[in-house]
Structures are given as structure tokens and as C-alpha cells.
Image 1 (tube, rainbow, N blue to C red):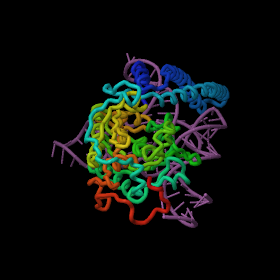
Image 2: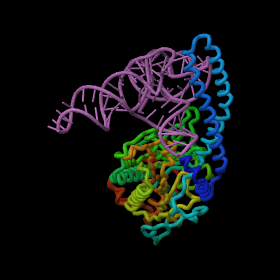
Image 3: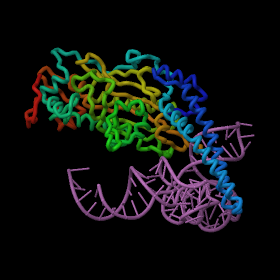
Image 4: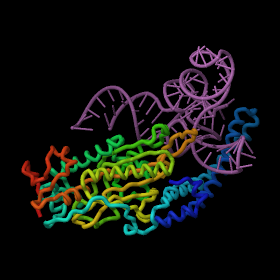
Length: 435
RNA sequence: GGAGAGGUGGCCGAGCGGUUGAAGGCGCCUGACUCGAAAUCAGGUUUACCCGUGAGGGUAACGGGGGUUCGAAUCCCUCCCUCUCCGCCA
């Protein structure tokens, strides 16, 4: 959310942001609702003022004068009641439209339509050339008994899956590894709620636009979060933080639920796009300063890079263009890991600067040195998300004999083992046939 | 899930239909006293929105929402949360 004062003073800047971000919002409608709501507020404030005067006068007035005063007060109440519906309507329209006003992209963000307009910033590592025919992650995972699709799809529908054996262990390993890397850099581990009220999703900017993408538990008025960012940011909802405590840095872990409403039929094969996954996420709260925030952005980005470099996965970083960044984002970098089966780098991380967009919606403030209350700036970035990360992990480290080498960084979390081999231990109750 | 108690300002805690943004205490800030400090005394100490260049003014807020009333922190309804006991349970 933006400051309405800023929107009033700079409608041109906001309109450009709306156009650049390819959003559908009529700013003049908002400004009109703002004018109407203020006019009505003034009118009602005056009526209330009169009502308060009368209520104070009534007990003091001599009994014979009271009926006249009570009568006027009754009239004031009626006028108030008559003005209220329109005031409520104007306020609701204003509030609803305010939730759709985007953050203004940082100056360096390229203006563009889609993925192709993102600007590559740098690459790390070299995609491996295979001297054998490499298999894709689905193939590898099935032949090594790391995943089971057939069972879950019979009781949980398409896009569901079960990680099995070393597949399950590998996911736990990579998640814990990422937590350890980021925690060692000063981030406090947090496992937040994943079932939240709509105000948490609205407060973090996912609602109202992302409603269709969210699983709901209607009976209880709860929603399943698509990222622990929601729970981590909301941790400080309505807080007034000590400036001395900033920056606050969390590394969260949660299962994430996404309906992928806009992506039906896309990437349906394998573990790339699934409804349920686990993610380790970084979230920072910093003072309201664009350059401090920018610095923090690159800190979060470098943490993600440290995770990938530790794993030895080649990646590239792209600065997302205006058409690809979300409503609240001021700046976004995508980290894309090399996936041999796709023959390209694909998104595994997303690093976002939001300035006070979330803090305004979630009412998260701090008192600055001058004693002024200010909204904090928030940022977030993935540390690692699985099973998507298993794709580059399995595909890049596969061997000609069908085994997979475990990156050294993960070995401590895998009982010291260096390879994943076909399962010789207990059989799964139901096996997908190796392809 | 059942029974009961409760949610008031940074904190504790009064108020239970009118002059209460809210007694009292604690904390914090400023001033006086002091060589300085403590103690003591005096004053101050919420936030949001609206009008105003400003000084200033208005409105709202006692968990959330709704209702009764000329007037609600106080009465009624509803939801949420906390605590105690019982039940269930990883």
C-alpha cells in the first residue's frame, strides 16, 4: 500500500507504475473516491461534533429546556444515519482501490512485458556437459525410488506426489542445510503458522489479487499460506519496533500451498510445479531508507547464492522487468538454477524489495531517532524450495550408472553418504515402475 | 467439544449510562532543589483520519463487528483471544 498523500501529490508517477506493471487500475476512480470520502467525513465529523455538544448540554440544562435539546439531538442522529451509507460506501471503495495501488518500481528496473524482458545480471558455475545421455529428474527419481506419483494421485489428485526413502531424506537435508547457511549469517530460525486469517494475506500483499491462488479452509475462515513470508512478516503486525532492534532477520521454514490457478496445464510433469512444497525463506525488516533496503536486498541475494554455491548448482541471476514484478515489489531478482532436462536456467529463488508496502498494510512501525513513527521496510528471498531444487540437484549430479552424487555440503545431513543408489532397504508399499 | 472467569493507555489497575482520552500507581521526559546523584516537588507523556501555510481546530479509538440511547469503556447480540477445570489428542 502507498501513502494516499503520495498518490494525491504524484498521480503521474503512480499511473506510470500501473502501466509499466501491466495492472488494471483506474487511478482517477481512486482519487475521486478519496475526494468523496473526505467530503463525507467532514460532513459527518461536523454532525458528530454537534451531537457531542448537545449530549454534554442535556444533563446540565434545566429540565424544561431538555425536550428541545433532545429533539435536536435526535434530528442530528437522523442526519448522521442518513449520511452514513454513502460515507461507508465511499470509504469501502477507497479502501478496496488502495489495496490495488502498486509500489513504484526502482529506477533500475527495466520496463517490459514478460520474462524475455528480464535482464540477466550474472552467472555462476558452468552447466555440465554429459558424456552419456542424461536422464531427467523424474526418470532418476523413479529409478532410484525417491518419489511416488501413482499412489498419491489416487487419493490426492493430480500434481500430488510423495517423496520416499532418500528422496524424503534429501529434501529434509537440503532444507536443513539452507536453514543452517542462512542462520549462520545472523537470521533467526522461525517456523510460523501456515493457516492464517485473510488479514495476514492482505497485510503481506497477496490478497486481494492472489485469492484465486490460495487454498482456503472455509469452515474455519482460514487460508493456507503459499510461503512462510506471510507468517514471518505478520509476526510483527501492529507492532511498534525499537529502531535499535532493526534490522530484524528471520529464516523461516514452512510447507507452502499454491493452487497455481493461472498455470493449469503448465509444467504438469514431475516436481517443477506442485501444489504443496517446502520452502526455507528469508525475511528482513529494516529502517525506512531506500539505500539501507537496497543493501539488504543484496544481502538476501548473496545468501541465496551461498546456498546454491555450496550445493554446486550453476545459476544465473536476472533483474525482473516491470511486467514480471508483483504489485508490492519495488525490485525483484530471480535466481534461476540450471536444469539439464529443460536445457535452461529456471526460477528457484525470488528476491524482493517491498519498501513500506507490506508494513503499511500490516501496520508495522518503528520509532526513529527523531521520535517519529515510521513504517519499516520489508524484504524477502528464498533460501531454498523443495522439491523444485531436487531437479537441478538430481540432474546435475547424476552419474552414468544411474546413481546420483550427493554434494558435499549435504553429506553431513545424509548420514555421511556420498551417493544415492537404488533402494535396498525397506520397500515402499506401492512403487511406480521405473521408466 | 463442555463449564466458568476475563480482555481498559508503555505496564499494573479503577471505572460499570452523561462534564472520562479515560482515577490512582509504576515507567519515561522536562524543570526546581543539589557540587553532582538519590530522594522530594511541579509540569508533561497515545494513535489514526480530516480541515488549516501555521498556530490551532474537529472526529474516532477502552479486544473486533453490530445494536439500544439525546448520549456507551459502562446495557444487549455476535465473533476473536487469554486464563481455570473437564473431555479429546500428536
